[in-house]
Image 1: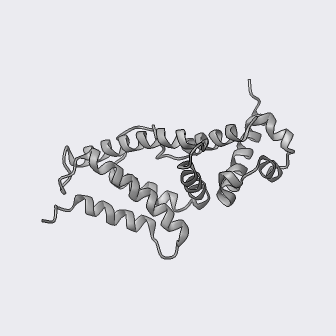
Image 2 (image 1 turned 30 degrees about the horizontal axis):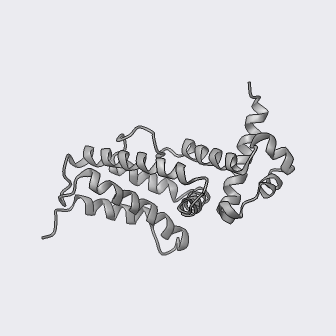
Image 3 (image 1 turned 120 degrees about the vertical axis):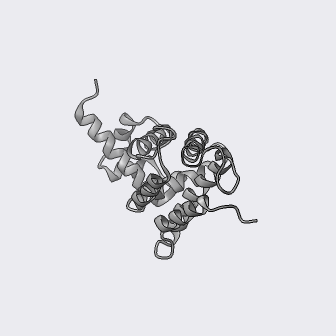
Length: 191
């Protein structure tokens, strides 16, 4: 059985890893930098996470546990207005959004240890978004797309807004832009 102190220390390490990854990206993150941030030696950190990849997987899993809109949670249970609330919530957590964006961007490179995680996650998220759109609009959106056709676009808007907001938070109002996109989804097709 893992002691409460060990769980607290693991949580500290995960928070520190989120910060370091947000600052440096995964490839620029070292176990030594994470260990230093929590007052451990690198050898002490290895007691909790035997490899950098194990730490990365734990960070990604923790992020999804902390995120109320994470993949695999209640597929299709989100209404579009609640997705807007999730976007607003993310605007209050720039560090977590930055870590996610850094890892996502790096994961597209060959051999990146997060690639499989994000590949699986996007399959789940597209399915969840399709179910959300189906619940909102039925089998066809007002513009004529099916929920399965529109789901990747919805995900792209959510993730793209995060990147734009991270780069220029004064110019990009992420929640307002998302609400505008949702309004477009409900608009009749322009012919």
